[in-house]
Every structure is written in structure tokens, then in C-alpha cells.
Length: 390
Ligand SMILES: [Ca+2]
Image (cartoon, rainbow, N blue to C red):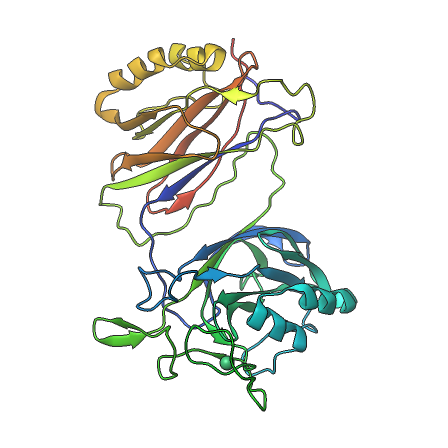
């Protein structure tokens, strides 16, 4: 066995808990963080996923038809730049974002801010660069339709008490008012607030449609969550994972959805990229510590060999069946790239998951992850390795 070196094929298997939970904490907190190993004086890059929580499940009142978010804008910056902050007066550029959802003026504002800005991105948060001089992140998006309401976070510094960047962290976002336009409901054509007020967060004592009754108590739940991950430069044979604590006790039986996210493309892998790149049907199994589908350094079983060489899985299915109660649930299925696969059952005794699919046409390369320990994790990702089979 050998692990591929520079010419590796990266693939992501994302697994998601089918549960979600809300955190009700103060505005703009990092509500969850996993400390990494990179000191905060070094430069790092983050991606963040925006998860909208502004929906009928969480809120009593939504705008009739067309509730949406405007384009996000997110910046890394020094302590000398402020995109927005409660208690501050909105800049003209920020007013445009909060009232019209336009990022144009804010981009200009950041362009002239020079070295106060590390970089900024609009839309999906990909490639946000933080370093010792620009350790803060701020982000905003208009709540639409609305007078001047927005959500986001400001001046978040994803550094642990020990001085390390977080590898992963979540920030929750609450509804704010930019203090520039009147209006207490989801409407967008109102008088200007004169004089302009400082930015404030909506709380249950202020009239707004965000107030939601929970068991007799008025609350304002978060409207969004940002799930951020540091982009790691990891060599082959290592795996990147996104593991988060859930609130589901591991004594319960759960289901994970599985998604194969393709990163094998000509741009990432220009050397001899094939004309008809595809994967065989993935085989995904939940199991205990006794079962091992494959592992680096282990001789491939006949079933693994068959998947890796010809993309067929009958032998592997036989091996899984023969493992009896060491395995719990198996998914074998045709799955399009980035398509979700139905829930994979896991329980206290079967808290690991392994997967395999053939990289085709590529002789005997496989792409797989193995022995993810899923107990007490909500979300995790990917592993890639390409053993050479004998
Ligand atoms: Ca207002």
C-alpha cells in the first residue's frame, strides 16, 4: 500500500445530522469553536456557510411571500475598521446595504480603507483571509423585505484563549435595525428616521415581527448561523473533518444524510484528467470497532479490491453481511455529484462510518473514508486516500 502524493484526488463526503438545534445566547457570539494548532500570529483563511434560520419553524411571523436575504458581504479587518456595530451610527454605505441590500457602496468604502481591510468577499464566504493585523471578521446581509433590518456579525475574532485560531466555529446572527428608516413591519418604503438613530438589536420589548412566542414567553430567536472552517493545507493521508457537538445524546439512534461533494475536476487535477470522469456507486456502512472496511496499511479485502478495480460492490456487500451485528446499516446507491443520500442509521454501538467509491476511469484508485467516529458529533466531513492495490 502506498498513499498518493501530490497527484491526489480530493473528494468530500459530508454527513449531516438530520437534527438541528438553536442556541439562544446573546447576540453575535461565537457559540461554538474548536481550537486548532495554528498560532494567531500566522495567516489563515476561512470559509463560512450561511445557514438561514429565519423560517416558519422558528418564527411566528414571516413576510407574506418573498422572504429572502440580500447578497452577503464579509470582510476581514483590523481594529481600526468598523463595518457596523450596535450603538454606532450607520455609514451611508451601510445604510444602502440595510435598506436596499446593495453592497456596492460598502465595497467602495472598503476599497478606500486600504490596509485596514484584509480582504472582503461578497456572496458565499469563501477565502476570507485573516492575519495578525486583520484578525477580525464582520459580515452583514439585509433582511428582505424590511425597512432597514439586517443580520450578520461584527468584529468576531476567532482566536482561542490560548492564542490559536479556531479550526471551526459557529456564530449566530440576530435581527438588527440600522437606525435609518422607520417601520415596524416587513415593509420597505417608509420615511427616513430623522435624526438617524444608532444601530440596535431587536429584543422582545421592541415592536417587531421577529417576536415569537415559545411556551408563553416572547423571544427573538437567531435568524441565521454562520458555520466557519479554516482552510487547511493538509497532505494526502490526512483527513479534513468538520465535527460538531450536537445536542442529541449518543444513547439515541440517529440518522445521518450523506453527501458526496465532488472536488475532482480538471482545475484541481490538470494532469491527465480523464474525458469521462465519474465515480462508481458508493458503498457506505455504519459499524462498530470490530468491522474494518479498509484502512491505510491494511491489505485490501476482495470486496474492496473489486470496488477499486471495477466499481462493482457485490463482494463487499457479502463481506458486510458476513460481519453480522458488527455493521448496522448500509447504503449502496447511485448518487449524483453533490446529491444527498438518504439517512444512514447509527447508534451507540455502531458509531463509526466507512465509505468507498471507485474513481473512474482510473485503474485501481479508490476514494474512501473510514472509521469516522460519529459519536456525539453533528456534522463531519471528508477523508481522501488512494491506496495502490496489489
Ligand atoms: Ca429602523
